[in-house]
Length: 82
Image 1 (cartoon, rainbow, N blue to C red):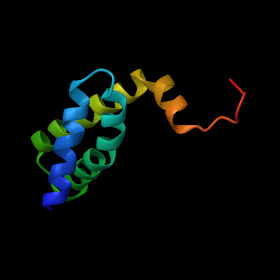
Image 2 (tube, rainbow, N blue to C red; image 1 turned 180 degrees about the vertical axis):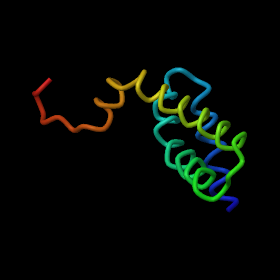
Image 3 (tube, rainbow, N blue to C red; image 1 turned 60 degrees about the horizontal axis):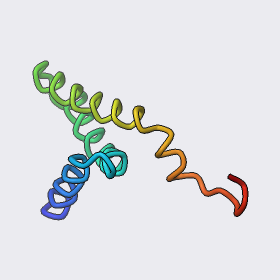
Image 4 (cartoon, helix red, strand yellow; image 1 turned 90 degrees about the vertical axis):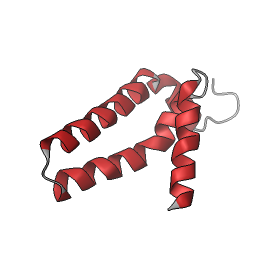
């Protein structure tokens, strides 16, 4: 569990700087999605569901804002095909 916390802190630090923000958001998405789904299916308090849903939507907003940069980062282009 300590390793997951350390990785989440490092992803949060990546989110602070605009040049590394898409990478941080992309790496933070699985953990935030897991927390949201855990609260949605196992916890029935509306305030917890709202808080985790808000955080998930903010991460998705950052990912969609930097969509083109992530697309170039994740798709390998053959040499000379730019």
